[in-house]
Length: 298
Image (tube, rainbow, N blue to C red):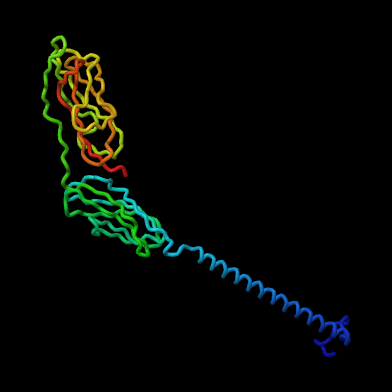
């Protein structure tokens, strides 16, 4: 043979029987490959069916717009009954949540929108601040509403603030010493000096317990021993007791007298008037007052 075309001495031409066997092997391999391809195709079809079924199931289980809950909103600041000087802006700190996403928050005054802030509705929960400059004075009634991406509004969060015009509580009267002659000819007298706790006009949530303390001076000509009491005289009684004992006090000395109290259940301005009694039950000395503002409990 020519150079480059010689066969290995170990190779030889195939016989007709060997060629038949080789053809049958090739056909068998082709058949196996076809079966594998068919199996893979079937698996792909099954996977597609499963995926489609999962998507259908997820869509069926997902809440429809009608089933999605309404947004909720809460005002963190200001508190109910907060007071502002005229010209001072009111800064609302508001938290909101909506399953469909929070789209905007509205501040309304007597049902009319006065301030609005919009948001990317992809946010389901948020906290924000919205300033508002009131034009009117007095007690202003606000409603705060959250609106989701579908246009569904929350229930309004209601609160009121006092703007500009602040109610002036009734002050303690001028110091007047009332002199009463007691046992043994003692000239009984007492002078109010100061509010130690709870200045007039202090605000409390309804049902809040507190302690009112007054500082008084024994202006009597004798010492106060056991049996002297501070007694509720008039106006509202929002204490669990109507009288408290007074610590023994030398003549011309000062004494702090405390009364446990609880803010009434209804909002408003309340006054309670108290006065001293000697051991014989005679009223004497300056009257003392507590004046509080009661805010709603929620």
